Image (tube, rainbow, N blue to C red; front, top):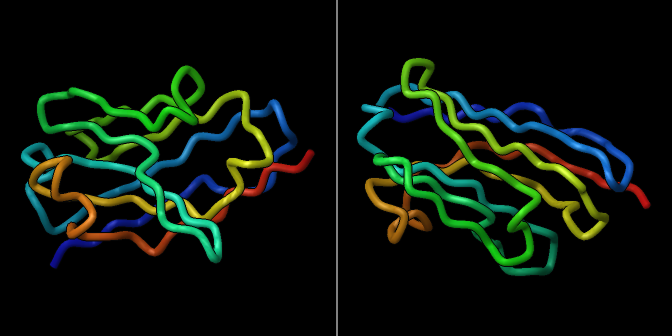
Length: 119
């Protein structure tokens, strides 16, 4: 059974930085795409960033230039470095694993970690 455990969320002031981590077990990590979604209550979940098994990355327009996704296959871990945070980045962030980025919505999800950015 695939398990994804996120960490690194918290409260930060606008302009600050956070790094989220997600450790995966129960799957062949290096063969899967990884991604980060976020969701605000009452709004549709948004794919923030994704990285393929080969290392190609995609970003939502709202985070381009501020967020960086990376992966360490030796540690079965994916990271999301978030810089220049804005209050509108406040959300629950979920780590997701899927065979391909295109199928990520239907993949395996972590429990989520809260990120709150104060103005």
